[in-house]
Image (cartoon, rainbow, N blue to C red; front, side):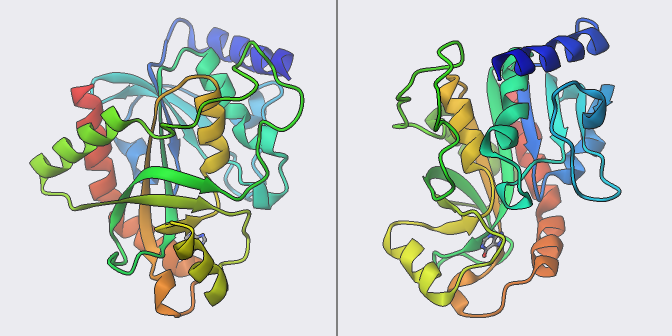
Length: 268
Ligand code: HPA
């Protein structure tokens, strides 16, 4: 796998001719609009990159975007890979591995989730302070020592320094933040009432179908992570959860989410 990661990274390095990203961003739900703020220098469709996984969603090739945002050089993933789509976990995190080889020093990740904490409201932004991973661990298998340790520490999965920065930036922009633990599930089903109850009992504040594999891979490689989640449905309410609702609420939160991320990048 390490050869494939290097092959991808080397190809990309040639394409971007000297552009060295400092920050990697996974544009999950809620951050799609961030693309419009990036001063784009290069854009590479996933299907042109050797060994890169290719997106299954029609009309959405998926691409890596290189450019400047908030005064920082960034590489953003437009389109991510989910375990529920049928990708192996190593494929889900492959782009994160490649971004590390491109030189990123920090990873930003966003997603949509169902609120389990009953003090949350639909549309809230939740800073991810910890997670409970219920997706098969991406590090199962032979460890690649060049990437990281066999038994990685996970005492600070999400950077406390970046969390503090988010709090500061949000306060200065009047953006309300919640804080909590993200439960990463395989999906694609939303949870049963008892499953939401179970997640609450074990300490979860929100549940979603992504993110934990990428964060584990990032921590394996020593990358500090900032994670943010849009509460798109009130899972605790017992009401139906739909993909449409998730999309709509995600779109509504986009402005606040983008303003927060740009503000953080400016201050890093
Ligand atoms: N559960 C799991 N994933 C989700 C949810 C949810 O309630 N909302 C958005 N993504």
